[in-house]
Amino acid sequence: MIIILFGAPGVGKGTQAKLLQERKSFNHLSTGDLLRSAIKSGTELGILAKSFMDKGDFVPDQVVIAMVEELIKGKAHESFILDGFPRTDAQAVALDEMLARLGFEISAVVNLQVPDEDIIQRLSQRRVCLNCGATYNLLANAPKKEGVCDVCGNTLVQREDDSEVTIRKRLSLYQEKTVPLINYYHKTGKLREINAVGSVESINSQIIDILSVNS
Ligand code: AMP
Image 1 (cartoon, rainbow, N blue to C red):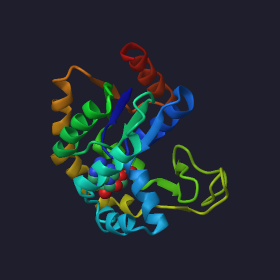
Image 2 (cartoon, helix red, strand yellow):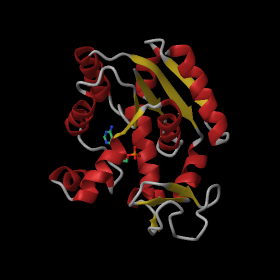
Image 3 (cartoon, rainbow, N blue to C red):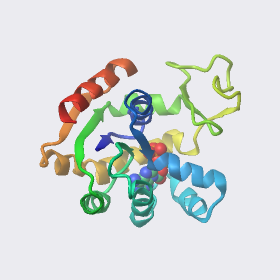
């Protein structure tokens, strides 16, 4: 089973996907996390990806499509939650073709909606642990000790692409390239909209309700 979590950068896709992984045993497949991990390991893919990501640009389609296929192939009996993929027309078309070939079906496309100004506020307050991947918000979910990860004790940092200028660029790229996909998925009858301004728990239970109807 495949669930696509849709929404602009900063709407909380990663947070929700991690909860669904814990609570519903989905595999969380975040293309952003995979690319950051490649950057951390200093691989050729990581060096290429960094040059796009730091500027708030998309990594080329063929790179992310190959990455996703590599992870899901041979696992049609498992459930995946896609976080941050697809982001372009070409990725959506490649995903459909890949899923048909590998024997998967999309159960639901969940679109998390948050106004842009809230997103800018959320992302500029976001701090992340590059060691264990935990994320914090300095206003809503601050670490117990300033600048230190509660989970592993590593230093927290601001992602390079979470500066206000880069956030605005990511939001405009989202509008231009990714929003048209909402219509694409609307036509399949699988699109479900959620107002994602509320608490993490209330949004999570809305997603779980959708999944129970669509699984
Ligand atoms: P995210 O963590 O999902 O916000 O992704 C961070 C950055 O990784 C994005 O701004 C892009 O530069 C890159 N990225 C992640 N997923 C994709 C994708 N599906 N297509 C192209 N670039 C991506």
